[in-house]
Image 1 (cartoon, rainbow over the protein chains, first blue to last red):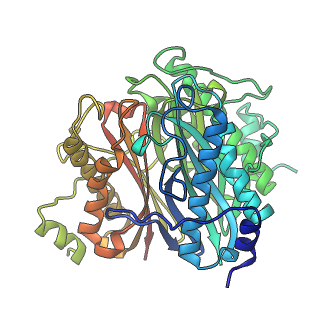
Image 2 (image 1 turned 180 degrees about the vertical axis):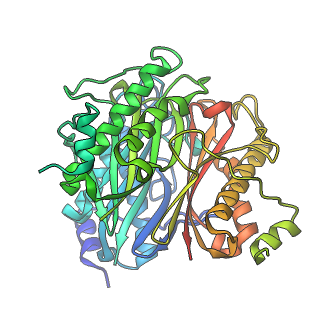
Length: 155
Length: 155
Length: 155
């Protein structure tokens, strides 16, 4: 049985991947009380390939970066599904942290990060509107272009 | 009617701006239980102009950077006011995250971030003392020199 | 009297330092409800010397970086001990944030950060498994190679 949120995603052509299994002494998510903290997700697609690799401002366009941020958000949803069984148990997307791999003079990290924010609202409507911090970073694991972490209030 | 904290700020010559309205699918703050998560604030002044633009270690002095961090903190207060109506409802400043736009060899991010920490204590006294993480980042939105995010316990 | 977690650390040859006392208007930790937020810890050793200085990808090897991350984690434990009196009161390591000072093309920040994650599991077993975000940053305070912050559920 699939919840209404996941049905809405399917109707928009969004398929959730298997959530990434960390290969070290950390995990994809931890719940404490009604808060679910999800590990930083890289911009892997359903096949486990990076949607964008390298730096905004050099190798990656804003459009490609936004698609990468959207992929990070899809991976956050996959972790939520693994944690909760049903995305309908998400009460509120509380915060997203966006990390954009970029050159030192790149000023448009928010335009990139909108790819993740838009997906949260596409999935959860007004409950998907979140506090957000976006920064440009020197490098990301595996040369990923974007990484996004999430904090959620859950039922 | 203005609360005692805001009166104290006024007495110190600190005016709160209109809080920034995000132009995308995120919001300035989200409350979950007694926690208020505030989005990363750039160093805009009351007129909406960046207090400092560019990089610490190159274009921006430590003094200018500290003034920029202070402006970020004032913008956090503006978000708190919008969220709570009255700054007296802040129980504790729990955490500030400070992001300093800088050259790769800049070692003095904490001196810059003190501009934000000092303002929190000027506003809230001992309740303004917070956990803090300060890092040097590759770039920030709109070439801002400083960005600060906040986590608050609220009544 | 020393709790069982600290006895286990001692058996592994791990000594907790005096926790760093911030020299400004912030503190080492803040508790809110059952959450303990610990400030970003640099890779200082017991003598107050940085375990590794400079950048991964240039001056610092992955092995040296992992040792630095482990030192950051030991410093997080020292803050926990100061906050709680007894490390046995840690219910769960909820999240670690890892900041790796590195060159723009360094892809191995997770290998460095494992030094911190492994120490948490060495100390707390399964309760030490945490959500994690690791990024490469442009610079860190005092040219430290690694900084780690922590969020903990506590009794």
